[in-house]
Image (spheres, one colour):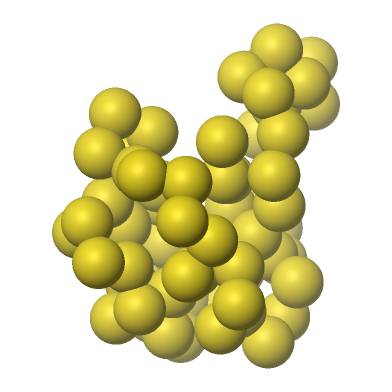
Length: 67
């Protein structure tokens, strides 16, 4: 699964534009978030993120990071 670190995300929207599944939206703070139910794990978002805010991890790993 892919996730976006909200502390690193700048809200540029490049990942949102690149997502073929429309799985990425903006939260109330203008940061991008991935809907894991819609995500196809294709990695298109990871390829375009210039800030390194997108990472691949299991849900358990993300939960332990409190992201």
